[in-house]
Amino acid sequence: MLTLTAYNNERFQWSQNLTAWAEIYNLALATFRMHVRPDPTSSNVLIEFVTGGADAVILYDNTSHIMVASAPVAKVQNLKLSYAFDFGFTMPGGEFERIDGGTIEFKQGVTR
Image: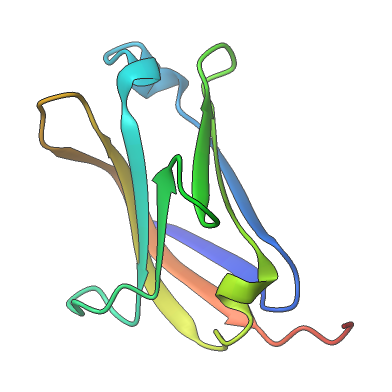
């Protein structure tokens, strides 16, 4: 379980090394997804990061096996609490494979 901290006045960016997963799956074919919700049982998705997303996007480098989730300030500026998140991927024709998750706390930034 992961605990992340971010500020709501700057671009959110988080990276994860997926080398161990790349030894099992051809992640170049995967569609990655990360959901941020008020709590783990909520059906309300506050931010959905996805491979090829328009603004909340997940990028994966098949050489370094680094996954980067990124969202502009406009997506996080109203978040000021601790939220639940999880992330994982789906292979073509497959089911969602959860990699990890935890909590992410968005703190009020000062500089604007």
